[in-house]
Length: 588
Image 1 (cartoon, helix red, strand yellow):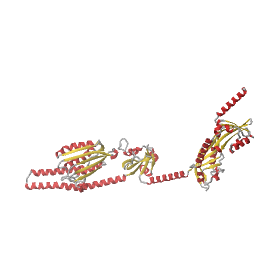
Image 2 (spheres, rainbow, N blue to C red; image 1 turned 180 degrees about the vertical axis):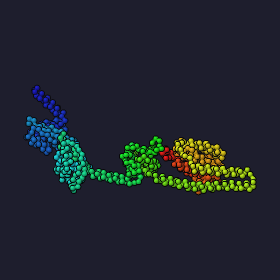
Image 3 (cartoon, rainbow, N blue to C red; image 1 turned 90 degrees about the vertical axis):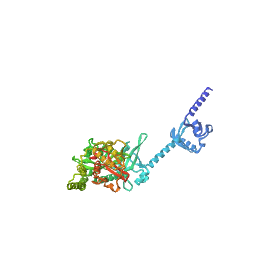
Image 4 (cartoon, one colour; image 1 turned 60 degrees about the vertical axis):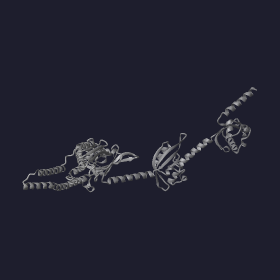
């Protein structure tokens, strides 16, 4: 009785242990009848053990019968077997282990359907990646025998997959480099080589071939080859080289000097005209500071030419002085344009031309204009001085004829002598201008000094001078000459306002220029006379000579500025002067 109880306890314990397993377990006798089944087996087979114990597996289904026969056939040769089996009634994959123990068949199995699906999906993605890869892909064994190729391979080489499979890779590329590359890849090395593949039409296809060993269980079992078509790349390189040669040809054909620099001042390119005009070759210029193009009059060595390299926008044409290799200088006219990549400034292109001939022509033209002005002055002098001399001559004849000495005659004659002296003083200033010394001056201060000087004269004619200044503006100029300009303009404005009024002076900054406006409320200038302003001996005043306004125009021109005039009859006249705000190099 005790032994029987111990045996039953043992069976219960064994059953409990087997029920705890995650694998299904059941036993069959040699006739195929179920003798034992754990809980996981019940779940996987979707049956209760009470319904199956004692029944034959041959009656469960055709698939079960086929599996049982596989057990018996296999057990004749070995004691246990392992295999994977698809059980169609449940649409399930099982991994099966079967043992023969003391006349019983023990089957241990587990559901691997999910793993199978993952493997199939992975295999599908792998095959899709292989098949639809944008480059040529081939799978080879360690001897270089082709096992598979993708669609791109077929498309570009012209061979079908059947024509390639089980053929040697060396039929496509029979050279030493290809042989060595396959050998290295078979030994585990990864490498890239540029080779030519022979297509079916005997044309060559240039590719970059990447060879990678295929490793499984730490063993090299094959070679994976990816070949990138280099046709477009080589065409692009050829086209880039062609365009580069064309650009160099264009750059070297133009008469202007052209060169480019990066942000550190290194020369990027340097055309033939730049070499011809400066005497420098590109390599020599790289050994010099960029300031070799500086102006000698710029004390700190920085000119507008050099400063423009940090500008983000194109620079207008500017005149400057460049150095030659032999130490001489020549005048140039240049423009600088930034080199931009993806919105960032990475360098500058400078285009310049030698303007020595133009400067010489301008000098000759100025000399010609001076000679012409001398002729005009001579005619003007003859005309202007003849009138007072005629008066003087007439009064002397009257005094001689009448033997009289009237005080009235002396006053008239003295007035005419003063007029002659005034004309000669203005002519002397035109004929022999003072030497110009340029310094940095406050435009606001100059206007203030001029208005203070003329304020008393203005008040005598009931004229008020009103100044409007936006900010302090410094201009590189000859302060004395600019004072003369503003004195001339404000005096003319005062004399033009017989009935009093307001003269407004406005000083403001606009970009890199100082703008000065002097406006009056006088009688105005007829529109048909405006273009004659500045000509010698043309004046709208009764006793004016026009020389003062002529000198004013010349001073503004010498300061690289310009003067414009607007006038309306019985409303007033407005002179607008524009002067550049720059360094010494601007006026060299």
